[in-house]
Image (cartoon, rainbow, N blue to C red; front, side):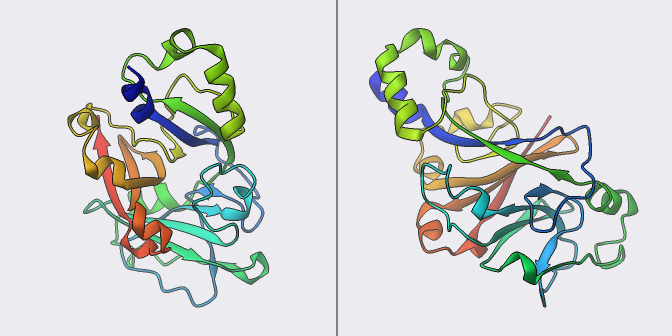
Length: 231
């Protein structure tokens, strides 16, 4: 029905990278997952919170149809894998003022396996905007269900193509849940009031960093939170 289609429509930005091939010699300030971050001078690292990703917001400025993020600065995502907590930092800083930093293993909890998994490999990524109708089992059938003129109008609105499958590493849209947990509250206020800032896999879990819509408008990124789903 039109109401179902309207509620399921989402603008999304997928992360374009090969998760099986680590990057080398990533330029300072580029968007990337894991590795050693490029941080503002004097950044205070929280114990046991591993660097998960950084996003250079200037790389999104021309493609973010939602226009809901600053056009400059860096977003940083940190994950505590021991208790499933996360945090997001925003710094409006110039690339020249960034420096690489990483605490030692003991500061990060002493788990060498986890420490190496986050620090020793990094993945530079680009961005692929699109829009999708998140309707379970019907995403790939939307092109057949909708009139072509509506699809073309949406392409012009978002300046992006229609996607027919959900990604596991992206921003905006709906978090991906392995066990279908999202279907339980797909129409709840909780679901519609939160914005997905970043999601990516770690081990056997999919990690989602979310923020309340009003907090995002005020750029209160320290109110962001993490949910996750495991296989």
